[in-house]
Image (cartoon, rainbow, N blue to C red):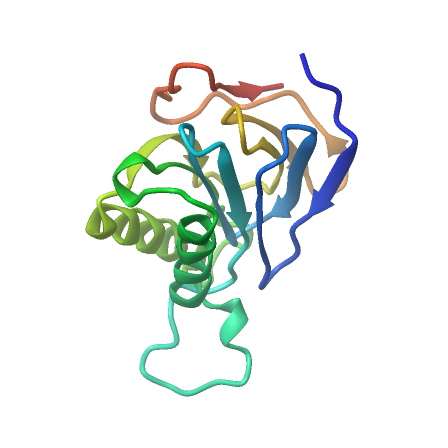
Length: 178
């Protein structure tokens, strides 16, 4: 087991691509979605964190908040580091409905991410989308291991909630819930 020498926090509107085994990427999500994508053969991977699916045809100075922009940046960043599109595998996290009664932007974010990856021919091998609580996600890009901690508004960290669908982990990677 490799020790983590560097923890990189991926904030809303950001993405990071790494090729070092001693790096863990981490973020905190509510209705936002993070795509964790890697090429196990090229030994490179990354994470993004987006607020909204797309700009609906409107121009915006805040393009970095849009999934359509950040998904392209993440995939292109991986390809620049030697990844091949047909080997990419993804895990998706977030997309919670954190405020009842408002539009479910979390579900729209999750649907966008799944559709984007399907259209790009990128396999979704795990993750956890939806629910009504935020989560903290840690992702080790080279191994594909991911871990999430479910958050509770005023109680801090709480016990894990089982995913709605069974998760499939690639060989050498996993998703941990605790």
